[in-house]
Image (cartoon, rainbow, N blue to C red; front, top):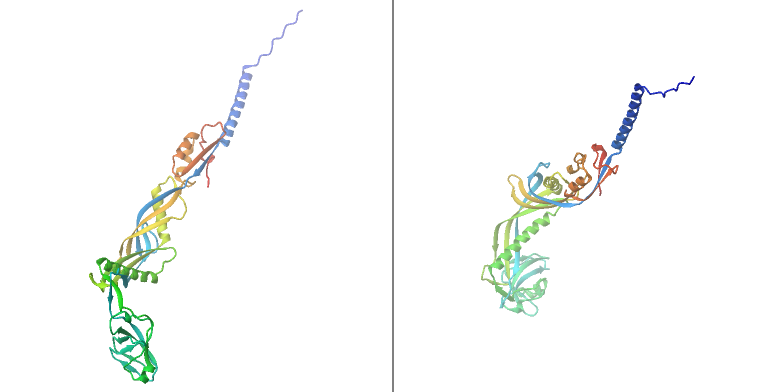
Length: 378
């Protein structure tokens, strides 16, 4: 009998279902692992080269005497005042020569054991016969000396003497050896050049007097390290010995001034200046921790209240850094390379930007902030 042919085994529907499920599970597992791998290694690095840009602002600060801490625009400081009188003189351009009586001072020496009074107009005579007279009475102590003003007896150039010795003809010959006079500086005024005094000469003499008063104050109050000071000078009274139209070679002036000095530790102005600069540049970039340039002027001062007002101009430098709000990571999540580079290049304080995304085929930055890093080059 012929054998019956056996038909091929046909998988049951249940087996096929299980097979499909297994293959699907393997595909899903692979896909899940792939996604996990991509998410894990999906990173972005944003490298920024900062550009240092100047920043400046002007603000008003109030100096409060006795205050201990900075609060807003209120800064601690000190206010000093002084009342001073200064003198000054200036030369007048000379136009003519005139004769006068030479004047000067002598030292009268008494080597005897008795005091010697000398009245005004007492004669003093040089070896070559030039006569001077005392312009005030003096008493010369024994074994001592006294300084006295003298004037030539007659006008003329012969009275312009270099330092010399004088005898006193009114004394007896013996006393003349013991009591005599000497000059240590030249006698002047016998022949001099003079000019006509103008208002500008008077003003210059007063200005010189004011300047000398201020110099006296500044010499007594030298500058201190890291302390800014501001002086206000009020002229209370001025006068001159000469008047317009007088003929002389020198004009003498006098000025009484009140000087008010406001002193502020520089670190207080820098502290306020840093705050004001940060406010001025906004929150997109950061003020760099570099020394600030402080230029302040005194606007007003009130010694009664112990307050002074300053206008302060501050200059510093700003740039982006990792602390800048403009570099907050949430701004770069899921963004394209081109969009990030364009937005950062438009930011003040940025010189250049480079964005690296890994893997290279990913078109955007990761959606996880901790997979994004920002590097700011120094």
